[in-house]
Length: 252
Length: 202
View (cartoon, each protein chain N blue to C red):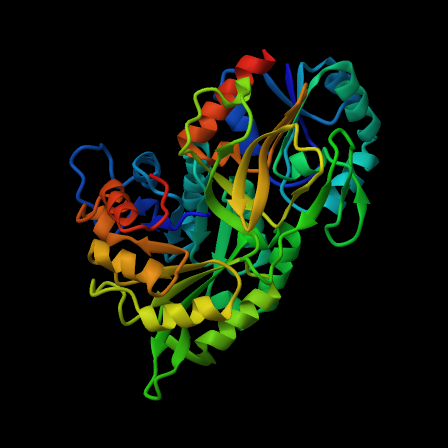
């Protein structure tokens, strides 16, 4: 059967990886392409880059990173962050991205998902959602980097996104993100049960057991993390050995 | 010279790059004269079967590909390119393919499975072939597809993968080769398969 995927995430600002890294054995680790290549060679199944560049002027720098990644890395990669239009899709796909993820822009204009899926196929369109639990125990969708509550229900939005043509969902829980206390298993499970496309869990990984839990108990198809890999708290190869030993099908 | 058919679908740059990394002379073209000169013709493909076959027709490439296949030129289909090698596809209708291999292209049962079949899956050897040289029993490659080959003629199938059904992953009938996965996105294993392919075609 198909394996569960482990996906390192690289946040890129002005052409450099941010969130900090702790590598001594590879040179120029802040270059996203160098780090991406390192992860690809040490067992990552896929990569996600988020462009968190604030200004438009540096957009070309990021496009160049996409091109260089496509030239260097021989596993699939997804680009997200600031995608607003079909033209943004075009630029990134032409530069060599395998998939493009949309977040805020899709909430404001859901037809963007449909148009992108019609042009490139659903497998290229990833719906990224930031969610947070409300006082009633339901999960709301947030946009603008987690600042604005849209009032949309997470499960309803996931279903709508898939109906419009999204081929994959990245589910990021605002409360667990960066806390390292584990993924939000309950909402991840609910989303996985609600849609028939792969779901990538994001936000909260601190230990190998957290990965095991979200891939088995919550049934996520993939688990994404940034800091545990960047800070070398967990090596992908060790993580995969651990998961395999526990009976999870992974690519070792 | 290796020719990659430029018929207006998907991103062929990744496939081009993968063959260039093998130090092969690669031309991206839809020129019939050039295709007739090629030692091997690569049919890449991301997108829908209908559009792909319509474009091949538009550029008068159907007869060219069939003639070259007959002549013994290597014809190598990747992903959708492999599906085009078969007789017909039922992707959003019914469309005739190149008919170089016997079988139909049908959709995965999406009431039972997540579709597309997307991610890394294991290659299971069905038959010895030079194309599968040095491939062990635990090799994973990257798939992205919603349709698969249904055929009564299993003789060309070298490797399968399991996804609810047995998926034809690598097929070969003489000079006709198909790969349902993306070797150019399959890390070291993909590179090994392309190396084997290179040995075969040069």
